[in-house]
Length: 425
Image (cartoon, rainbow, N blue to C red):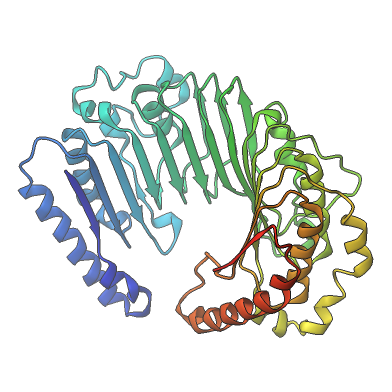
């Protein structure tokens, strides 16, 4: 039995209407879920999902939904909310886990009853997937769940009060962790765990990993710290995450990195990614550093089989900055192309270009890859940017995608070897 509450109709124009109408829509959604919970008579539910623009003002109802899901031995719990400010986020209730607000790690590991012995929390014995968006959840709560429940996947987005997450010898079922845009987060420490996949999006943190022998998939997007003072800004590079992951780089099979804002250090020696089979890079191809990074990753991944290059090209921004089609060509020069084109790769079979645009610098990246991927079997050009930028950008995106398709068919298809399957989506 699945209970999935999402008001798509009212969500589409929610941010466009007046505050009083927004509140009315919120009350209507909450009342709908309240009634469904009260009227439900089945013994178990597999999934409980609530997705709407809710915040802490509706805490009493949301607490009730969670308690209901626990009693029904829920396996998948998803609370996907959206608050105007993270300070207004709904807070996951400590009390339901037998924790007191403000409890310390000392309390957690030396006296707090486990969920196995806590009658009120028996429902979480079946929990396998926890997805929280704009829900404030403290590190102690996540640690308690991971230590005491058969949770396989945990995803937390925009939790204001998540500062430190320390997980030592968790449940053997736990395999996946995704933490995104948690503004107060300082440290993630994972020890003696069978975790397989780790995703992090946010500003640089202290990442400590110890005895994680099954870790095979990592996705890192490091964001800039917002500052009004240019001199207070912190340079982003791949060096920090590579250093934090140094003991486990050789065992990674899947790696995703956002290098859009990363500064290239020509003196840095990339570690060898000996087992890497899948690489996904998010870049801004109009800068020469993107080519340098691409070359360095190719050299460091001798057994790479699939490469996905996501191009972050915002055409309107380029034109507003006075950087037109002609000006941009000079940022990636022919000399640079020739310098990086001398690194043949003998294992790469599939290349996918996402967000391709009708710009010569974008085509240069494809040409570089075609020259280096001597064993290539398939090239996919996908002009669709899979990052929503709001309704105002829809028409521009559609126009740019059409131009990109035409550009790829005209300028790329003819240079692709006959042995390579060329696909333009």
